[in-house]
Amino acid sequence: MEINVGMTGQVQTNVEREDTAAEVGSGSLLVYATPCMVALMEGAACEAIAPALPEEKTSVGIELSISHVSATPVGMDVYATAEVTAVDGNTVTFHIAAFDEAGKIGEGTHKRAIISTQRFLDKVYAKL
Image (cartoon, rainbow, N blue to C red; front, side, top):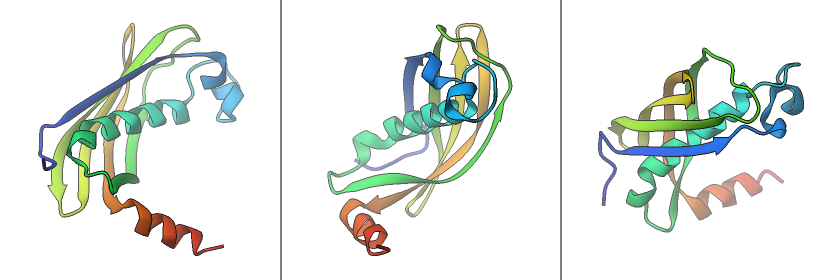
């Protein structure tokens, strides 16, 4: 299977105290943290292309541009969606969005590179 424009993924979670800006250090309020929303969005992108990746390959995030437009309280369910909008060699571009039970909380674009898992890890750990 190959990665194609139009592939989609979705992931969801419930906002807990440890997912808040106050807890992760990205602010002082007990509301869903932007870094946690970003992680959820990246997870949706990973889900979108996972069926097309052979066992020895994975993807890594290389670019992200998002807006976080609405705060979400602890206890509310959130979900993120991703849709492949372009494939250029080993680079995959996605439209990503996140929602809580009241509506859209963020959206943007995201790029991931398809890499050989072992080669990537070998290169990373060679830094030590």
